[in-house]
Amino acid sequence: MNRHLWIIFGLALASPVCAQTDQPESEVGDTPAPAPPMDHAADAIFDPVSMAAARNTLRHEAGRMTSYSVVFNLAEFRVQRGRDAYRWDGEGWIGGDINRFVLKTEGEGAVGLGVEAGEVRALYSRALDPWFNLQVGVRHDFEPGQPRSYASVGFEGLAPYLVKLEGALFLSDKGDVLARLEGSYDERITQRLILQPRAELNFAAQDVPANGIGSGLSSAELGLRLRYEVRREFAPYVGISWEGKLGDSARFARAAGDGVRATSLVFGVRAWF
Image (cartoon, rainbow, N blue to C red):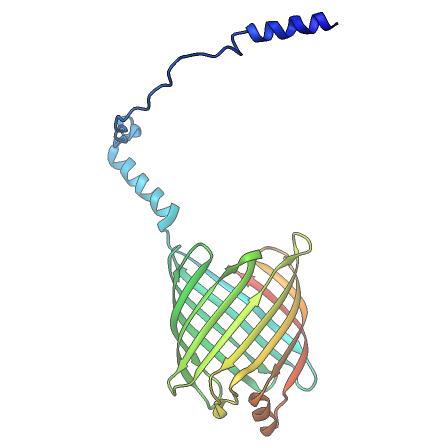
């Protein structure tokens, strides 16, 4: 057996695979790369004018096309202690991949009493990267008896783990400085059943007694909604929402005889087109 092993080892040493070669390494050339072709092969068969128009259409549809979207994130009825209420939150945009015009609106009211608070924002949106947009524009509140306008600058996008974030800073025509931060996350239980936690925080740099806003963290809302996507564009939902006024905002609300905190059972629909 040992003799057979020595024979195999000797054959391996003598094989060309294990033999060293003295061939020099090939030299790397420095010849310039050839110029890229500037002609189009299809022009030799089809009308060049028609093909140029087709290529222009392709470039337009692959990145320069104008598109639009309208989304109602919240359109809900709220069952709560005292008088039932409703709320909406939606936005629409038109433009391309980089530059867009965005229109946002949100508000709430009590059944039988009309709108208690509402706003509209008109914004120019510019993509900073594939995930976040910078948004600047104006905001107008149409609260009964206390309309007010603001300059607005903020951001909107997707943070890691697909958390949707939106933040904005507002400067009113009266010199008031406000801020808002919103976040939500879609947890897919199935392909159609989605659980969405959502939070909204509002801040103020100073007291605004005319609007019942106190400095610091003025109000907060926390919600949990379970929606079922009948289609991707249409999803009814049910959930629970807690909202409350904090700090001086709570003091202003108590002085006016208004509630400070409310927990609601919500029924609504999320839709887009």
